[in-house]
Length: 182
Image 1 (cartoon, rainbow, N blue to C red):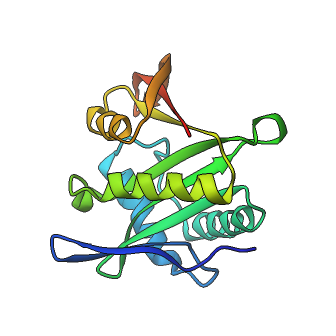
Image 2 (image 1 turned 135 degrees about the vertical axis):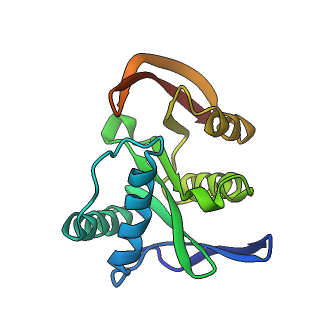
Image 3 (image 1 turned 180 degrees about the horizontal axis):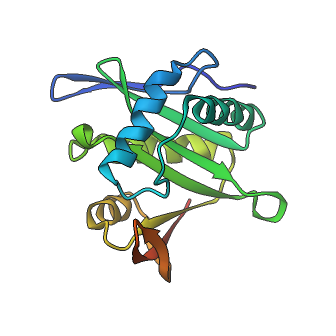
């Protein structure tokens, strides 16, 4: 069954927050504004070059297919009707199908308000239910102390480190691997 619709609604600091699955008629400009704002910020994400509308549309189509095939859960984060983030868990193949890899993006304006922690708990619960994953892994920049702290609060533990595994705009940083056993 193809998942869609609202997963969770709540208020934080008088802001209406919605976690929902993406839809085929998603506003590409809104999705593009999200990812490109993080690239402009030089946020601690793997992408470093601005994304084009064509690339973002392809990203959406691919993600909708993966959701339909039960290979991924993906939530968009809306704050007062504007897309401000997303989170996903994607399963491995065959022998690693029980392992999901987590990714999360939040615009600077909504960080530090508890939205990320709530988003993590919600996407993990959905991944466990919809994808039947038993382990969730993630990769985080060694210098991203805030993110590592939030991941620990929701039960992730550091399981490894790839020395100089990230080239963040010419600066080599360690890539910290964390896992949560469900």
